[in-house]
Length: 242
Image (cartoon, rainbow, N blue to C red; front, side, top):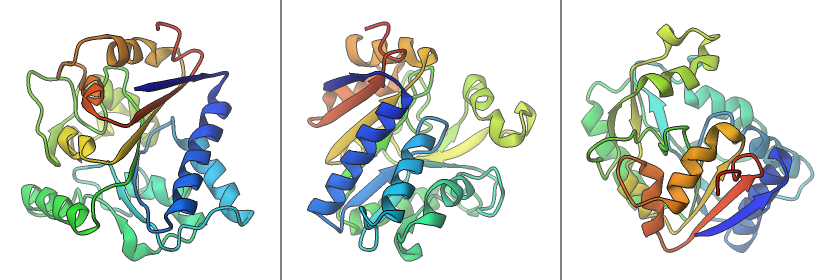
């Protein structure tokens, strides 16, 4: 892992946005893996600004989002699809046909996960995967467990993860779905390059376990130690336990 420690959240967003822009300039058909959550909000703001200034072009790119809640239609204001429309897709020229999401409303969730995996393979694999990290070390919705499912799968969310998503539901934890669909850790490890971004002191313990701890399914992000091209971009608070 290459670890970069920057001053604050704005610096993290600037560096990761520059990495995305560089990838798209070098290869306009880049396949991006994209996260949701609080951490990438500033990243997406910078990408929107870069597009508005004519400095970045998504026209030939493809995207795959990490995860989606089970039981929420894409139109629901708390869905991750709505989040992405608000923070990125609605303001850039990424073609709708090249935006890929897991469908949490699918009648057969296992078949939906298999469809998503097949779509990634058809696209030639993910070139650049952007990740956030949960306070318990999860990436995507791969929660700590004795074992992890390698491919995209139907996941049950732990209480802490549901609490961290309550802001999407006006603070009502009870309304946060208990289940989600997620890329698997194996899917993430098959991507060509990974950028893990983390900000804030609440992520410091998870970052320490990810970088300095043993590789264990109890800290899913620690499996990134097995990947050959990982950059971890942190603000000072997230790096404070290193």
